[in-house]
Amino acid sequence: RIGLCGGGELRAMATGSCTLAPTKKRSRTSLPDSSATAVAAVTFTQLAGKKRSGHKKQTSPSNPPHPPPHGEFALAEASTLEDFMSALSGAGQAATLDASAAAFALRRLPELLGAEAVAERGALAMRLEAGEGIEAAPLRSTWPDEPEARAELWQDCQLGGADGGRRGCTSAFLWVHERIEEVLDDQELREMVQLSWLADAAMFYGCLRPGPPLPLHVLEDCGDEALRRLEHQGELSEGDLAQACRVGCGLAMSQAFARHGLYATVAECVAAALKAGARDLLWQPIHDAALALALVRPWTAEATRSALALSNAVQAISMA
Image (cartoon, rainbow, N blue to C red; front, side, top):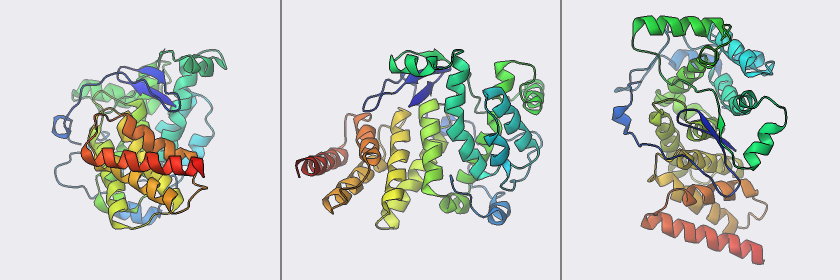
């Protein structure tokens, strides 16, 4: 996995262990107010304008309405970071960047940022395997407060980075960030998206850490919503459980949430699934649940019990 730490430093995350740059923790109040599967576009359009109290969304000057679901097709054609950001800017201006397309952008960006940081083809994989750090293009998480700077950045977004500068090229990420906030800031929209959508957002923001400031409210909302579903929806399918484990892993990788109920809950759910005979459960959710716990030491009493339950369940399966 690839993580973009604060200040634009790209680092390798080997399976089973991670090296993350330390980050200064910020409380939610210190930040500016602010699915892999598509949800019905009409419903999103009707609900997108509603916001939870206490949030003031950082939005573009024109503040376009929530778009219909067609932006993903244009983004899929781009093969380079510059082309991708140009398509992203065009989708934002044309109001075709919906929630599904925004999640698609989050899945594509790590690969494109890494490829842009390393000129030679194939060199990125070798350098990441060696654990090297790579300078990558930064991703803004807020529009500037100053009108002049805001207007300039807005022009850069419209040009899609045509000036050849990295700042102009990556500033189009703000379109994606707006869509992610738009969904998470509305309770009805947040409860409608798939767990895979929440997982894509949590893994991206937790690993690549856009900003500064790091949008902690995005990570917190993803974690809270995943935990709510685990606690109130009863038994999840193996697919949904795997996505919930990804959400927890993303939160832990951010190094900004040492305490969250999701870590222990997903570990307990995976352990229960293994004990119930789910021997064909893929290794990925087991890995993600264990890695999340490993990244948030020292553990609470609840996390300690969950880690022990998961460890015992995995050992029982391996000895069977």
